[in-house]
Length: 501
Image 1: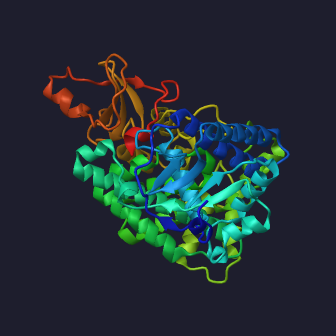
Image 2: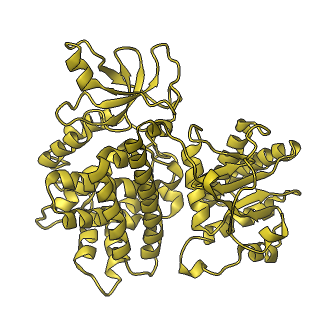
């Protein structure tokens, strides 16, 4: 490491030359990124003594050794809004793009520009670094901390901290949506808003679960951005909800529920202030889960009876967390309602059970629909697979009047269409496409983007091929392309983020 890089923590530097994209195979970079994530999350969720952590740490060491053997730096460095793995920035079309952006966001939140694995490797030192990363979360209490000095004082030499790379070159991102400048710019604004909301959710939920009072003004500002994106180009921000990230499920889920709830609130005709308050309440509806131990919250497989009781307590725990604070205003009361009611169901057969007569509020009914939809369309540790959005809507529609408000459920179908944004579908032509915009007048015929051609060939993610199924069928006397059936992106090994971002 240079003398300059050792004297500043998380500082920014401009690249001196274009990164070398050819020396290290992309597969090695993918393995380094994946194994880093696996080891870090295994430690956070299960601890150092769990076998899964030991296995993940061993795979991470092997990935670093392959870089060293090739004479390359085994590093993960923030590069503009993304990440550089080794000497290669993760490109817009790379399958790991979303995971790279999440890690870049995590590093930024901890005041880290990047990190590099050094020889000799010591398992104990790398483990200690992961533990330090857990404590280096954003917040005023972290300001002024010299991370490099902390590593030196801890005797950690197997990890070196690097500076983030900035500059025009690093900031340039290409997307297939750039072929239509208006759509490309809307997608970029939606993406920035989504990740800003994710940071807000993570920071505020952790602080509120502790001793900090709710920062409702800051949360409201983020929700106003979401409302602006919905008004600008609704399906750009809705498409972000299809990009669920397993490692940060709780916070992604809260942001997704916020976006879906505000969109439904607008369809219901609520005023801007009411929609903003609904969005803030939705963002913190799962606050009570911060009291559930992480090994239970992220347990693979089914919960045992005791664990299920812990999970069912989270609505009341969210209310209790908010009641600790002195100033409980109208907005905090709305957050309490969302926390309390989002699992109640309109027929009160959910939880928590209320003995007295109770009518679930409109706010609670909206958040309940958004919460259920996002949870069922997301693959989680205790689900073998995420249900297809089309299947989820059919399932939920069958429960209207019992679990869900009938009118709101129908409005939600109008908002999402039969094949919501992010749905992978097979067309009558044999092509594979992803839904990118619903059409309220023709819910079974969304605007789709082609992902694979008639012979199964992949469509370049930088090649924007949009098909308006409703317009095509109308123009072709009913003979145009139509959706035949949903398709499974995991089964077909398709990364939807390449086509939605």
